[in-house]
Image (cartoon, rainbow, N blue to C red; front, top):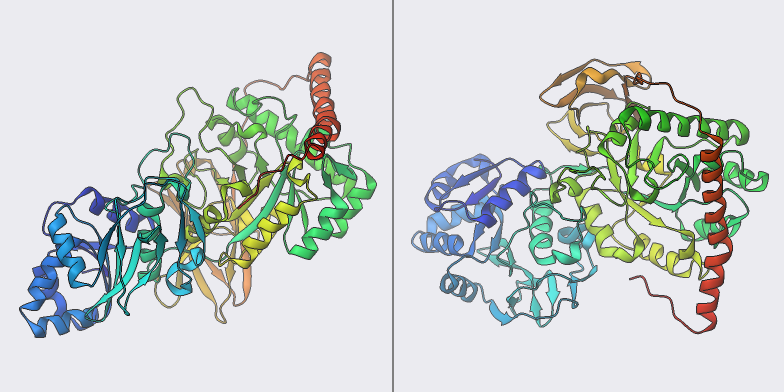
Length: 588
């Protein structure tokens, strides 16, 4: 019997099936058992204090009834069980009886969809969500829980009750959710985005419990990398409301890093003064690739050949910028206007880039692939030819979304445009200060290093560490005092396109089967090894025709008009609003 046990004597309910999927998503093996089977297995010495149970209130009441008939079985059971996650079953009378037994009471839920939920200040159980306030925007539970018992505590305070309570039965911890629904990670997201504020009660209690009770079995991130991205700016003294000298001062004062999503068309236009600022402060500033010409939907349509040649042109321009200025760029694509096609992701994969970063996850294809909760809970979306699409968020999506992402193992990548700095970056640094004070504990790095350091790991035995890699360059860190073997798995739907796998530029052997590429890598104590996956370059069927004079003129006109808008129109508009006393919205 596995450590995670689904306790049920009936066919799996929707909530039970969703829990099984969640356990598999987090890398936890599970088994199913009835109350009788569970009690019969309690004599196993290897199971002492190990099992984590998942069950409805009906199933737990049935188990308690069996335990009441045998004091010896009750003692053996309490010794073999680590904890239990409980959700309301279909039988309300059974749920009431259970709550009475546990000194819990039902209270009527709030109808408000805007009321705040308060996550307990319990560092061990709540992890990155510890002490966070979540502004509920989903359907609240019909009933909440309330307890005055000394051995219980609220985990998710809401209205006059709690959406989740920690209690005990026979010294066994119980995590009791007031909500009968469990998030379905295979549910399709119509907009491709997951907002924890809309799924608080279905997602937060069960994820907190799994990550707490089964910590050793779960995939874990080595660290939460963080970076702020500002789209579009030229490397001039200022762009719109972004003043690079002032931004550097704020980064040093408030401890964060900034990546400029740089438009390759601007490769010959960086000023010497700002270039020197970037060269002198590589720990604070970095560059990524923001399209090519930054024209409308330039990576949202076209053939793979066209998109591949467009990507190659963007890379040549960035190389030219590096040669002129000395500023190295991260081989990461940030899509203009967030628009991309599945063909664009294939083109990037074969162009030597290591990842893409975007707000949107649904492609611009005529028949886009469905995006599920599972896809966006993953460290990166791997649906597009297994080239990683890392997601980023705006600060106004709330600290709670960044904290929940960190709980899942995702990096904290933030996005703003220059107008978000119109108040002297006051709201921005307040938000970043909140992130830095939270249990997210971000590690601020360049965007490239955030991407390379974002992977999942789990120790399997004393000498082997399982790794789930995402970017085509991954920095494997061994923080221990002894050498470790990393068994690295990366999803790959087309192994024939993979030319080499190298560790610190030395070839390593790998196995490719069933959609995975698996390599074994030895990492020395207190060392970092860079694993790189190199894919074959494409051979376009048509030659790239030079852009016509008219096309080049249109691109230039678009770029100059955007700069005019940012540097004058937007500044004048916001300045007028400020003069009229219009207050900018707060970021929570």
